Length: 65
Image (tube, rainbow, N blue to C red; front, side, top):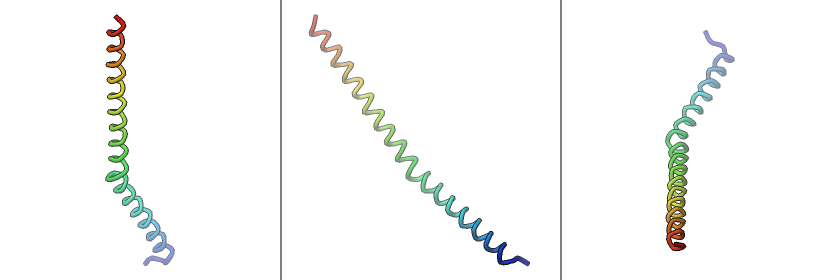
């Protein structure tokens, strides 16, 4: 029916498939949300700093008048 080499090949295939499946689960549930949340928090901080700098620049020009 099946030889031992075919059985080892099937086990290797299933091992690689299972490792890939769990890697994708890990990436989808932890790494990608962590990356998106961190990038959005960094962007919000940059936007806040830009608004603060613009506000200070407009306040300093009003003081110069």
